[in-house]
Amino acid sequence: MVAALQIQSTRQQILQYLQRHGRATVKELGSLLSLTSTGIRQHLTVLERDGLVDAREERGRVGRPTLV
Image 1 (cartoon, rainbow, N blue to C red):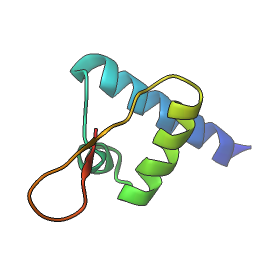
Image 2 (cartoon, one colour; image 1 turned 180 degrees about the vertical axis):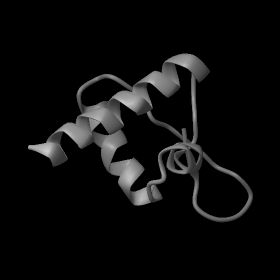
Image 3 (cartoon, rainbow, N blue to C red; image 1 turned 180 degrees about the horizontal axis):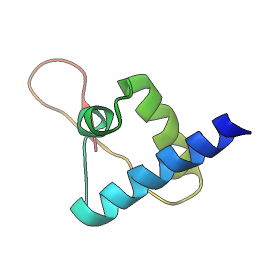
């Protein structure tokens, strides 16, 4: 039960941050919430599935595309 509440709290924190700042990268959110990129992506996948956020990739020069 506690883990489920923490997951909800994490998603709420992500949504609150995005409401205040408009957009963020996975890296920014990970730093803010002390989570790995994989952890953030899992939360964003659920939020996107539920229609609460839109995620898109921004391609840079080198490396993995940035998810915003």
